[in-house]
Image (cartoon, rainbow, N blue to C red; front, top):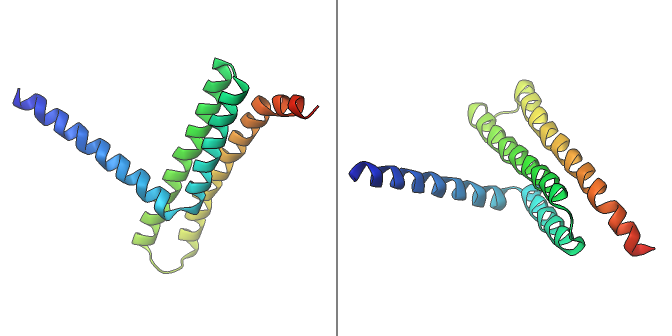
Amino acid sequence: MTNRRGFVSREAESFACAFRGIAALLRSEVHARIHLLATVVVIVLGWWFEITAGQWIAAVLAIGLVWVAEALNTAIEYVADLAHPDEHPEVKKLKDLAAAAVLFASLIALTVGLIVFWPRLCATCA
């Protein structure tokens, strides 16, 4: 029984660490707050337009992709700053590549959003 409690306790601490990471991401990164707003807008639009299960899957995967990219980008930036606090061309290149990953993820999410919502938005305007 002790091992079980130890496992549950370790898992609870892992979740606590993850939630602290989410809070830190939202506190420190303006773009994360923009992603949060976009996430809420997509969820509201999905509910409003009653999108299909397949469209929900696409939307959720696109949202998740952006959040994962943003979190990894932020982590990479922090590690790079710890490793080399002064400006350095290789650190800049690393940060630019991580930022590019967020841009790619965001463009993919935008494309998914346009595919799912554009016809519905146009139908309501007509």
